[in-house]
Image (cartoon, rainbow, N blue to C red):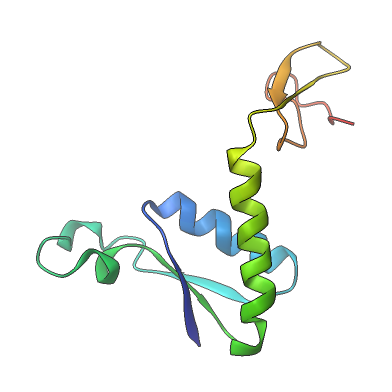
Length: 102
């Protein structure tokens, strides 16, 4: 196993790990409940971490992480065809009514 990503928050670690698992890269989250010991140990030790099972997946995982970060930086939006509500461009479903965004 190899440490791939150190997150600031637990949900960031789970987002990355889930996306990696969706594309077939086996990933696990560790230290998700260790934030209370920050200060006693260095932050990079206590913060949530994403680990890859196989080191050979490292380059593919970096590409997935770049895609996640790029989608998070996007300020564009999409209009829902069902309710006309605006949702962030990286959403697949409308945040208001749950309809698929084309």
